Image (cartoon, rainbow, N blue to C red; front, side, top):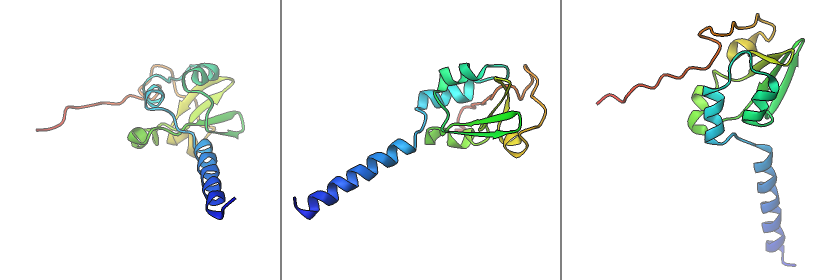
Length: 124
């Protein structure tokens, strides 16, 4: 087998392995992450909506679930990751929980209990 053929096969193998290890949510699931996940949902409901998280971290009683989003939504998502879970329920999300995973749970129904994205029309 020629050396160039081996090099091509190796390149395809490495590229395929790299894609599998960098799982990103589809644009549709990224939108679900930003619009539908709320405090009080169960961890199972989150996983049903988004699939398995790309990364998990455990800090005491809090488990942080991280999801990679479509690049178009990455700017908004960086403020919404991770999803903080205690006793099987979502207690909050975002940068405050990554900085202090043991912070008090967010109250359901508060402004911080869901990720609200305001979209305004483009200025003309």
